[in-house]
Each structure stands twice: as C-alpha cells, then as structure tokens.
Image 1: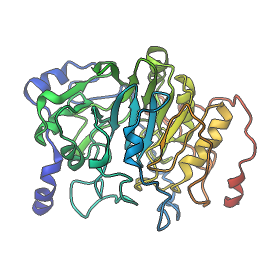
Image 2: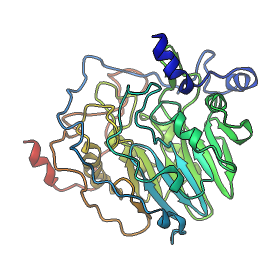
Image 3: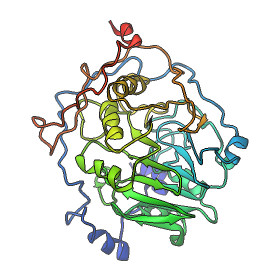
Image 4: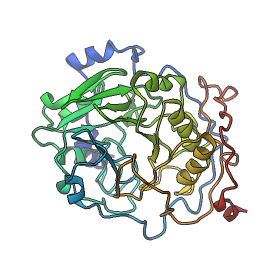
Length: 385
C-alpha cells in the first residue's frame, strides 16, 4: 500500500484549507461537513445489470485523426465542437477555445498500470490543439480531472475554471493560483467576451475513497454573443437543472452525460433517456451525447448510449449530433447520423431502465415523459431478439 500511495501521490491533489476552506463553508451546497446536491442518492445493490459481452469495443474504433488546420480556422457559424471521446471536448465558441474535462492519459487512475484504460490514442496531440483560452473541469474524478493532462496544459494565458474547492488540486500540481477560477452553482466568469456559468449537477466528488465531497461538482453554460452551449457534467437527474434553460438558454447544443450508466446506480448518471428529456427541457436546438466511447466504467454495450439516445430523441423531437471521436462539427450545419459504431446487441430503456430517484427513495422516481412523436421501430433492435 505504501508503494501504491507513493506512485499515486503526485496525482491525488489535496483538500481545501485556509481561505479556500472558509469560502467552501459559505456555499449553499455545503452541509457543514461536505458538499451535497440537496437530494439523497439511491443505489439498489440488489439490481445491478449483468456485464455485457460488448461492453469493451472491438480491436479498433472509428476514430478520426483531428486535422489541426481545421481547428485553426474560425467556424462559419461561430460554433464548432470536437469530441475526443468520453467527456473530453473542444468547444470553439464566438472567438474563444474552451477545452472541457481534458483526459489524454492512458488510464483514469492515479496509479500507472491500474484503472480503466482508454481504447484508442487521443485523436490529436495536446501540442497540436489551437490556443486554448480556458480549460473547464466539471468535478475531480480521474476521468475528468486528469493531473498529467492539466499539468501539460499549464501555459501562460490559459484560465482554469473548476468547481469550488477543486482549485486546491490544481495548486498542488503547481498551476498558478492567479489562473485558477473556482465557481459555485450559478456563479460565472468572463473569458474574452464569453460568459462561463457553473450550473447545478447531482453527482459526487473525491480522489481518495475515504476523502470525498470536499470539492463541488458542476455543469457549465457557455454564453457568447452569438452562441450558447450547455455541458451537463456528470450528473443524475434533478428538476433544478431545468432552470438552466430559462436562465441561460436556449442552447445551440447541449453536451449530455449519456453513458456509463447502470440500473443499479440511477442517481449517478443521467442515462440516454433522461439526457434527452433534459436537453428538450432546457431548449436545446441539438444535443450531443458524451461520457461514452473511450473507457469502460459500466456494464452496458459500449455503443448503447448512442442507440438509446437516437430512440429517445425521436420520441421527444430533439435533434442529435453524434460525430466519431476527433471529427470537428458545427452543430448548426448539416450533420446526418452515420453509424460509425458497430452493430452489436444492446438493451432498451425498458430492459435496463435508468430513472433517478426523487430523493434517495427507489419507490419514488422521476417518470419518463410522454412521447411528443411516436418513433418508428428501430432497425437495430432486431439484433437483440
């Protein structure tokens, strides 16, 4: 254990203390001992899903090598999104470049050789990215707050925007305090004319098992002069998130936590159906499912989030953009769905439902919203019969 701790220590970060801790204690989300979303969580351990044989991908995934020259040009619509797998995404909005939850390491873990391993190399090297104006991090889990990647991005002029309390980790990794901005829910900061707002989420934090929830977890709304983007962060469902639409929307695209879900822990992630419902509720012109397609954290077939998103989106009349990892897209452009993922069996929302509890009680869960449009029979479902 001592050897493991020594290997991990450079990535663990540290807890808030001093003036930072005093600010943490003033947060409405601080319950006196730790951060709390305001709703209890339910984990029905007796109802975990069985591992899918297709949870891990085939030897290759249809990844596009991102062309750095494309990213150096201004998007015609003022908004371009490049998803690199899992939640790592570059948003080029109204003249600035914002990198979301960058994860370029081999594993989501503080210890070399241990932990979930990425399925493919990053579609672009960090050095080949365009000038980054801001790096935003939703919470401090290893698949979102990757110490090695953040250290490599520590360059003059880059602003690091993180949830309240999480700046302690960055300072531990020698990122200057003057370039760290910590936000509570509904607080914001300005980056070259684009307002970055921290939004509510229902999740948890922690980089050590016995030391959790001492930093907050958030989503983000990027509000520019022409375009608006909402990133949910890792979250399960709670109605407070719908306030993001009236306050900061409508949105040109919503990046939704749509993967790595399990019926056995419905208060951890949205899952595809609740992600679509939230996108509709906040006024999304289009949604892009993320938090899938790079590492395995749950048992579902790895392309299942995409398939279930398409079914739910047809039901609720929500436009969907699902590019292969590494392909830059402008959400307002013509982005027809082309299934770049393999045709393998997956489970429907009826077979493996993910519905968050209202307040930690499995007998009281948020119910599916009725279909606005009746979808046609999905062609891929025949594969599971």
